[in-house]
Image (tube, rainbow, N blue to C red; front, side, top):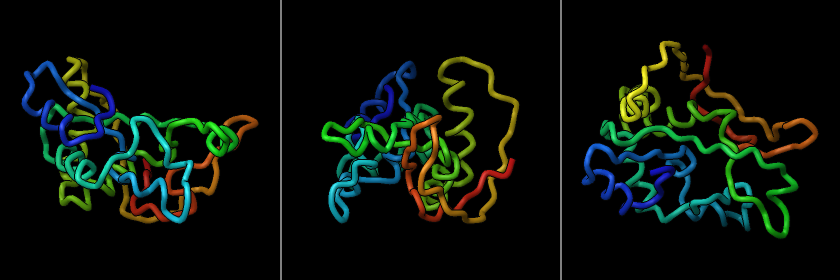
Amino acid sequence: LEHITTRAAVEFVSQAPNNVAATITVHHLLLNRNAMFEGGLRPHHYCLPLLKREAHRSALVAAATGGDPKFFLGTDSAPHSRHAKESICGCAGIYTAHAAIELYAEVFEDAGALDRLEAFASFHGPGFYRLPRNRDTLTLEKRSWTAPEEVHFGKETGVPLRAGERIAWRLVK
């Protein structure tokens, strides 16, 4: 299943045969549905599948950080322009590519499961699809930085997740 968002989906995948697995996005691990309405309507937190209640977000975090190889990373990063998001019929999707792995690291650290991040990000997916593991490596450092207020896609400008906010982990290699 791609981009699960509910406790029921976690339970279904957990109990299903080994030929069923699921991806989990970082924004569904970080945000619940209240994030779309903090201080007014937040169009840059609108995505499909929709953000759900806190109970569902917590179940996703437990699944992602629990070590079960049936759950793995699936960013679903959506680089929509500011204009497309802030319109009468705004596009669904959250741009996370600027800091996806760093944000996943925050989730895993907060859950006390930083030692399971590599498997979730790099081993479970290839294992499920019977693909070779990527031999390249990344290095993350616990050094905060501020996410850009905006990102540019050619002539368009977009607003990334956590725009102007601190991110605890930094990709250094």
